[in-house]
Image 1 (cartoon, rainbow, N blue to C red):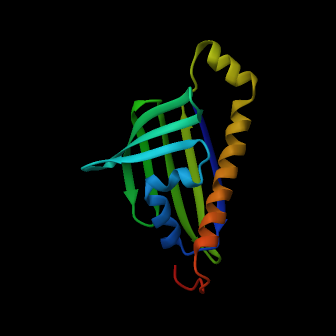
Image 2 (cartoon, rainbow, N blue to C red; image 1 turned 90 degrees about the horizontal axis):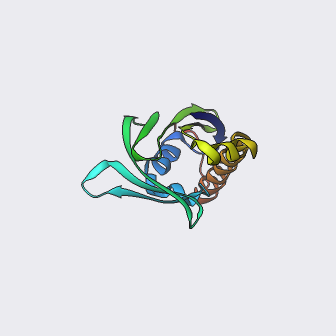
Length: 152
């Protein structure tokens, strides 16, 4: 299993950053390879994910929120499909909010796994997670009305 953690500071109040991230259906707006996240009707803790480069390289799974601490943490794990788990943590800072994202997932075995390892999949994952968080930061900071950050 590969596990990666990336973090960055967002110049917006923690409550706003948390609220945007907590709506999991927002994730495709900044996570380039997340094609769709759909909250399952009547089951707010379950969501269906589509991830990949595009057809036919799309992987799907269902995830469950396993822990939620409002304004602090959202943790999830897959219950079907690609085995994975993750956690988004939110920390107040003088400038707004520090967001730490940790993802863990299985790499396929066999020839596919060997190919991914040879192409440097771990470095590729790191670079893409950092890019995704930078897109999130840019999106949140641009959409936010200019107001003092005194509220946290």
